[in-house]
Image 1 (tube, rainbow, N blue to C red):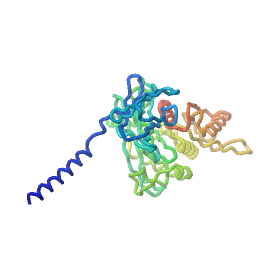
Image 2: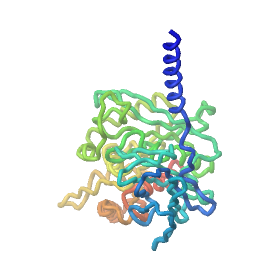
Image 3: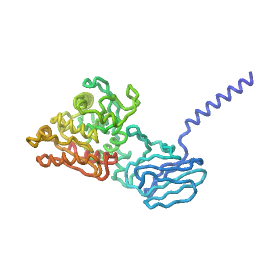
Image 4: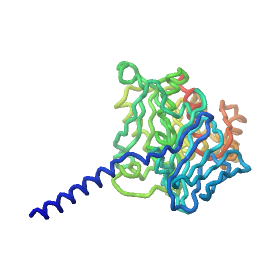
Length: 399
């Protein structure tokens, strides 16, 4: 009996120890570490690894590769790298970086993996990466994307009924910090749409939409507004993990969809918001904008409902003019401007593949005398641009 008790006690102690070990926080290694000179140091512990590589959107090459030989190596590109043999600790220090949100992953002996010392991660469609935000000075891009000591709005995940699509659907709603205290105030609404393969979490996670609005509103650069981020893939209820069905998000599925379902179902979204939130219901108190597929959807919604939105933003995605050969006119687009939008805003990166269509739309509008604003940035079809576009667009609307 005594022996049985000792064995049972040992098993219980082992189980408790295992549970306790599972709750031990982190690795004890600081990675990434943002240094005073705005370089960033990454650390990874693995004494058995043969190669460790870092891949990130802040690097001069696709990957930087090292071997654990204890020697510091210099590179032609800016930045420095050092691998040490101190108990199997691998390190890499970047060049000084500008204020921005950056993403990266590790490759250990060719196998892609997350940084085990960094709990900050984002999902883009079906790909996970580690992230960090760096601000070199107040007011740079990184400052707007990080959480600062300013009043914070609330972010809710809400379900609404969509009769047009025959299902319950989910969307993300941001309300400004003052919404809970100014009970009699009504607010304008920006409907913000994601790109192919995305969902209602994309703008709040990858786009840092809440942080951008919090910081802009606190500075007085943007009007307090409600931000509505719906799921623009009409056949999906919600993001993976919260929808009824289990599915793998892909760009191919959402690329193949037409905009008709979104056009027909969008009034369901507006009805829910205007029934459940204190909002202004006039045209010039509504804006719609989106990235890539969401930009095309924003353009299509403005064409179908020209009197619904006072502000239209197309980030790296447009509906090009559909010109009648006989008249040289796009009557549907002309009707958008006949409704006198306050702002019709096109933004695109210089190396973005959709620049051709963006220029076609801009050139047609200018030729017809339609007031259009075109913003050109560096880079291509990337979140770095879309966060910048939202930061700019939010300062232009509801003034």
